[in-house]
Image 1 (cartoon, rainbow, N blue to C red):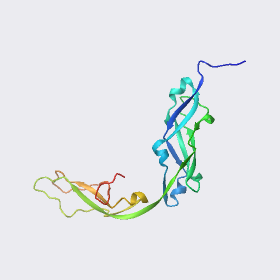
Image 2 (image 1 turned 180 degrees about the vertical axis):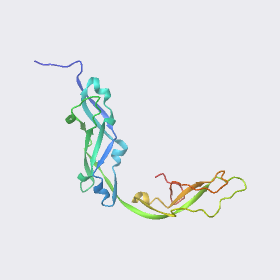
Image 3 (image 1 turned 90 degrees about the vertical axis):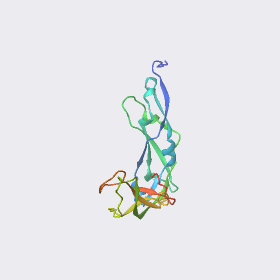
Image 4 (image 1 turned 60 degrees about the horizontal axis):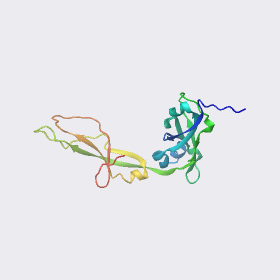
Length: 190
């Protein structure tokens, strides 16, 4: 006796998963390093599941997460990945039937560096007519300590804040976000 369910058969649904969850990050961070996994962060991976035909369109890449357990990193930076279903509750699948081709990823480690910088001031705009920007600009703090991966730190030549004085006619105080500049004085997008 053969029974075939033709009204709602099982089919394979394939989606791109880009959600990444890193576990045991402290293994790397406690050693004074940071990490990147460019192939996952840039492209993601293709994941296939078995699902009923009527639920196939409900399966989305955001329903899954790629798990990278850094405690399982090999001596050359290879880590075996896992994929977990976040169980959205709108459909059912057999979790043991989740498949993906990329089984390991390469983790790139990089040293973290700390460096002190004097905060520069960059004035933009023009104050109201008959007013000037004084020389007594007070900053607190005047120096900052930046902690960043070595590849980022080597790009930073100076640190500053921009003070917009457009139309001002009085003394002002406030806060500003730090801006980072390269050797040619161009602002870095960090």
